[in-house]
Length: 427
Ligand code: SF4
Image 1: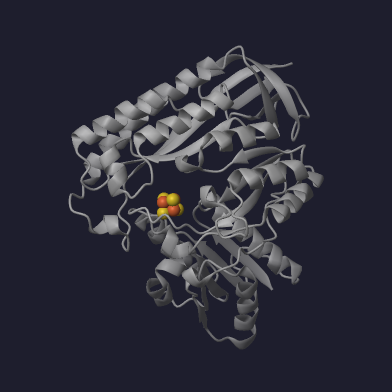
Image 2: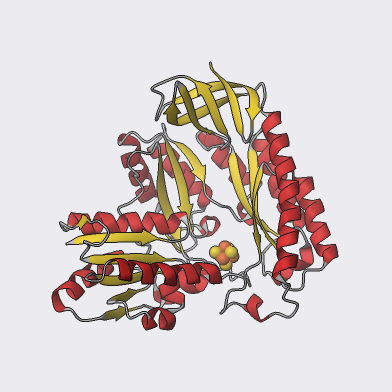
């Protein structure tokens, strides 16, 4: 049979879509063209109310474009909003787990022409699902999902209800998978998951994130490792020392900040205050001089006052981030924050986001200029008219004159900044 698959949401969802495709192709199925597919699959996202709306839209559009095909709706939105998803009358409705069963259900539905609704209870999942994914052909960078689930229950977030408890890929198996990706020629591995700071709490001996990073590094010493988003609480002296020792971890750390005001962090049910966050930033910089520390921020959380927003602006400036992802708070039905008093207008949330963005832009420019004179290892990814472009270990985009460098790491001496890119020459 021929299938079309669409993905909404994060890198983990893309990884899982790739696994679904790999499983389908292993059973002899092939990708198809618009209008000629036997099956359309929509891997949905639930992170905001808007993601849910886009997921619904994608389901309707794919069904209309492929009227003869059976429709399959799976992923986080199908999991958290199963009733709404069911009202779309998809032929197969699945949650965010067990891709092997999903593929079997698709085949059953094709044979029987009967609807299959099988949304499980995510909190009953106990095992990490080891998926065949991560090698994106034509890319220099591969992905390794080491963890699923989250037990933090931040008050604005629906993800724990979509993904269930923390489940981890054992370190030895992570090492094997990394070594296999290195053998395929990948030079960089993004270590990812839903909440990787909680890695290992379900495994015997409770290995931590630094243990799995060290295991990966030992198994695939030629790969440079880029860590996915980190909760600041994982950043301790031991953690920094252990991952620095590997010599292969990129000097780019993305921390979830969300607010620079202690009272707001408390109401978000974040597990740190600004002092703890700042000590994480300081430690990282001590162990990885010149590194890029980037962060996520939510503006206009319910009840956030102008003064508290001002505290956040002052705190992000103190941190001096190399880049930020800033989101105006988005209400998510089913979360405690959605029921909180003091919901702010769209205009207030957006204005605060714009103010934070201005500060972030200034910090980004300062960070880029601070790199002039540095020599950065760049993994080249694209090439046009004799100029190659790639990401440095600090994730800055770098361009340099040179050809046939795709997939190669070269040191580049940085000589200037052009827009949001560093420019330099190959050493
Ligand atoms: S740490 Fe918080 S924001 Fe991140 S997935 Fe878990 S509950 Fe959501």
